[in-house]
Image (cartoon, rainbow, N blue to C red; front, side, top):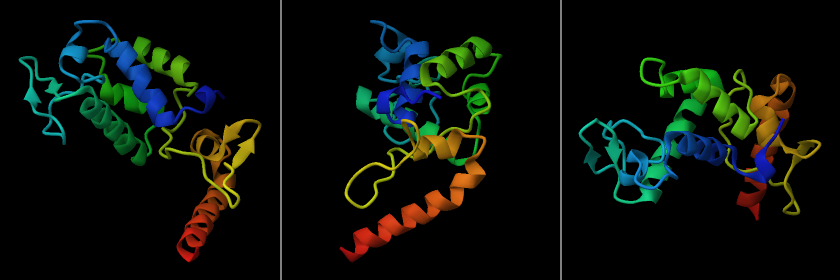
Length: 170
């Protein structure tokens, strides 16, 4: 499993989507609309309207990035796998969905059947170090994507609660 040199998994997915959508190409619709994910307009926070084709327009790129991250986090909270997410996000009647899925999978290291990771940072333990589970994989990545997640779930939940308690008490 790849975790992109410590890059936040939500950010990794967002960057892969933006690349596939052409955001980094000068003059692309995604770039003109400050919409790295080419999100359809749905009244989402930060959007200032829609273009003639129904894609959201944002006042600046950061607002567009935040909307894309918010969409990924929302679908991650629903427990979607990468494949389920891409099929919903880029349906076959509008996109080359299989190519899209392969591209995002290769860029992020997530397999199509892996659940979308929802945490944004590794867990911190007392002493300020990140909690690492196996090799160089942080627990948030391992917990959300591993077939053995049931084994780590209670440990991660306990660790999060313990860290929160220590923060409150300090």
